[in-house]
Length: 81
Image (tube, rainbow, N blue to C red; front, side):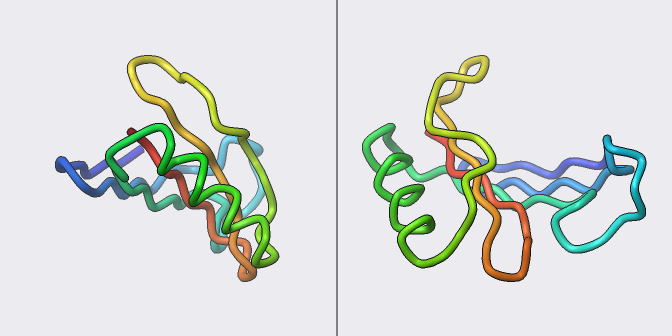
């Protein structure tokens, strides 16, 4: 996996864990540090409301509070605080 991260943004590219060919959202993910767990929950809910798919409900994962969605093009997005 190659992973780039700063305070507000993360980007990762990896060989897909499921062994399937890489494609949008399978082997790539973009992440945003949104500042608070309330904002993680709000953005996750908004993404689902707009047609996204939940691939990880809001919750604690290691030191971060995060939630994962796939957008309408199947790209994987994580919101973290």
